[in-house]
Amino acid sequence: MASDRSFLATSEGTTSGAFGPGDWGLVLFCSLVWGSSFLFIAEGLEAFPAETVAFLRVGFGLLTLSLFPSARQRIDGQDWGRVALLGLVMLALPFTLYAVAQQYVESAVAGMINGGFPITAGVVAAVLLRRLPGWPQRIGLFLGFIGIALVSIPNLGEGGNATWGIVLALLAIWSYGLANSLVVPLQQKYGSVRVLSRALLVAFVLTAPFGLYGLRDAEPTLRSFSALAALGIGGTGLAFIASTRLAGRVGGARGSIYGYFTTPVAIILGIFFRSESVSSIAFVGAGVIILGAWLVSRSDTGAAEQTRTEDREALPLEGVQRPRWLRS
Image (cartoon, rainbow, N blue to C red):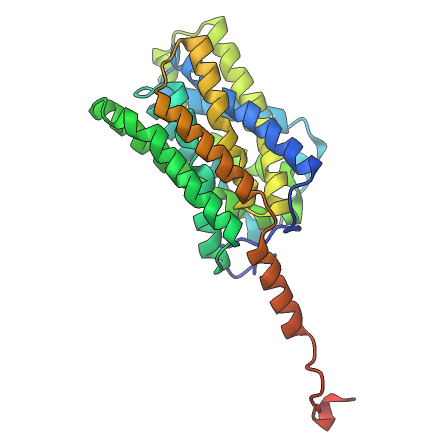
């Protein structure tokens, strides 16, 4: 657990070993739900302004988590500042950024850019933990960077609007990267639902002014409203429970690898449901991203080595005669 005196802090996961079946189950669930979220955002934008899409997404997520009894359990007052920051960088800010970005780029492109989220999560975790990840994770993060570049470059040549959309999506994954580290000690202390329900409440307050104002220009349909309901219940409620639980177990960096797998899901759904086009180089990039994800999921030798070092430092040195006043 991170020190209470440090506001921007994270901690190691409870395990540094290779992913087990339960971990991969959480990854698969988050990948499928969030890979489809870009399609739902695109459908919502057909009838609602971007800021209203973010607001309704938060609202449905908050309603979903309020059904869990643990959402009504208290948290310590000293942690409210961290939870409020989480509501901004994990929910309100990236939700709005992605909704605005998808006004300029297709859902498949936004999903491919989201594949870079594990890279930002790895960088932030390394900075906050003050250590480098193991070599498999470093290589995986590097490959992920190459992959996201391959899927982004073709869209940079489409003009200023597309470039602006890519910039906003990149800002969103940096926001997610910070959030995925900040949530680790909070999840380990309180569990997922208690933390997320408060963070969603903060995000609801932050997105409400612009979201409610945007309702003036909304032209809702059953299809668009259903898409946002699915986005809020699944992608903002249930998937965040799964993702924060994974981050608490394996740490902020490795707990972000589902971001790699949202890429192929977003591509497939964008092609089949919205007739979006994807360049061949993007498919190559998606393959590189998946390879990087597999490497990131391997046992984190950096964390394991740090744990062994700390354990050695905590043990008394063999063969060293302690002063008499320490023997009693």
